Length: 457
Ligand SMILES: *Cc1c(COP(=O)(O)O)cnc(C)c1O
Image (tube, rainbow, N blue to C red; front, top):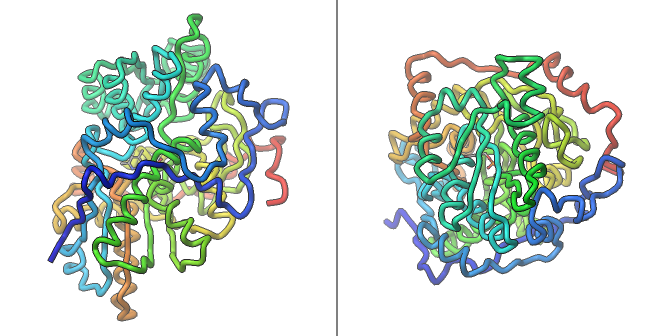
């Protein structure tokens, strides 16, 4: 009765998988302020050229540098677990497996791309990294990675989280990284927002504007910006999750996978586990691949597929994606990592092309799922990951009703040990559900007027 598949160090994948090479339609290019496709040089003040090349690459497989593998081998390959206790509690004939990304140093999948991004910046002669963080998962991941490569780092943390989640801030400090509350007085973008709204609680879009500005205005030219999700190269780095899972499921004797499930904020942990399976689907496999988002930030299920900016100050290029509008201010639900107005363009495209689908779930159902998972499997999941678990439970119950065996794989993107205040609020009955109203949504979409539309889609 094996409950886990552990890969040997030697079996760690040596290449990332790039879905852009296999999509039925070529991805739409990001557009600059003039409405023309962005040229690599135009991004050179923001990202190092080696990562820009990866961002635009159409190559199917990209070799993982040895220096990156070496650091990943501290916690990878991550285990694939069979969730037998959860199956028993649900009395389901489904076999449920999950990839445990909570075992990384910062406790989530984000470390996978943080290590790679720090490495490529170091290779390019960059000395200082700026970034933003919402709940602190990305900030702590890039802080860990910068500590490994001897890079300086400054993280702009969304103010509400900065005040409510002190522990991630302390993790960053422990790894030697300066974390400040956003909006801040240090950037023009921050000062402009505080002038209008001194009590602004911040948002990921605002923090991105600050971090990009801090990178591109550094007179030494040795500072670049990093992003923990959304971009093609970030999704690429995460595909190691799904590539490992394919080997591990085979080792567990599974030939046919029916469902692949992950939560989506910017889309990176979903892409990481799902894209190798999307490839199988393109090649004829029958797999239901499901992205799960919060009902209060319903990007894939309700927002239009448009060209939009990634940030409030419109410093990023326009990307073809589902978007609630770059001015959208998400409500303060506990899954902080899922409160982004946009979506990774590659993830959006898989939904548009019918290769994956999305569902939205309310926060109470997610916390109920998280608590059941904690009381069966033992691991306290990140509130973000609980969205995937809630959908797994729906699917497992459906399998029971239909009396069908089914193989379900999901991504446990992180643990919730730094998010216990959310659990406490839930267990004390203080949380409620929240759906975005049509009026609130319409307000957010106004900022899209006048922007170019994705052609032919
Ligand atoms: C950041 C985060 C997410 C959401 O980001 P994606 O890019 O959509 O993966 C999900 N789970 C955890 C644990 C996170 O830290």
